[in-house]
Structures are given as structure tokens and as C-alpha cells.
Amino acid sequence: PLTVNYFVDKFCLLRTYGPAPQVGRAVAEFSRAYFFTSALAVYALMLSYNYSGFPFDNVCNTDDTVPAEYVGGFTAMTGKDDPVTITIEEGDNVFKYCLQDMLRFTSPRAFPALPLFQ
Image (cartoon, rainbow, N blue to C red; front, side, top):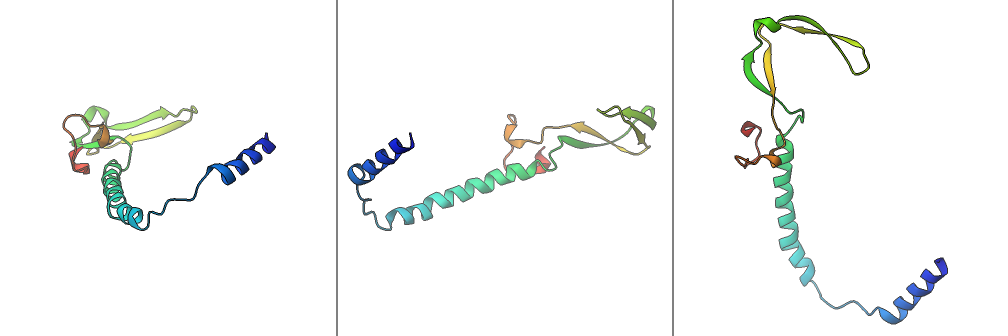
């Protein structure tokens, strides 16, 4: 197979492929003026959506405090059956699940992508 590839490539280089067309600077100037500018704008937009989801834990603060029945010390088990002591104190904040991937928002659409719109 390697010798077949060699002879096919040799034939294509010497017999099939032609010289490159003479396009001059037009392609480079068009690319620099339009393509790279639009690519940079799309990159900045996607970066704002990515940055808005930081710290990517899907947890939002509700500004409420923990009810009295949850205050105290508790023991939980990890996935490896190791005990972990959890202490909830009076005045701790309540957190809730929230979708931080603002690209997936359907109603309302989030633009510009800022964390305050979550």
C-alpha cells in the first residue's frame, strides 16, 4: 500500500495538479477585513455567554435565610461511604438550582449574557 501511495502521489504532482492561480492580495485583504473581524465578534459574543456561567455549579443565591428546622449539625455520607459533618448555622443563606448555561435559555432570551439575568 505504501508504494501505491507513492506512485499515485507522484503521478498527481507531476501530471494532474496545476500551478496555483494568481489571485494577488485580494484574498488576504478580504479575509483580514471581513472574516477575521466577524470571527472576533462571534468569539467575543460566545466568550460573554461562557463567562456568564462562572463558576459553573448551577447554584444561585436566593437571599433567604435557612429556616429554623434545618439549623444544627448533621452527618452525611460521601460516595465512598466516608462520613462528613455538616453544620448549618442560623443566618446561613439558602441556595437553589438555576441554569447558568445562558445559551440554553429559551424564554426569555438572555442578551447580553450577564450573570444578573440568571
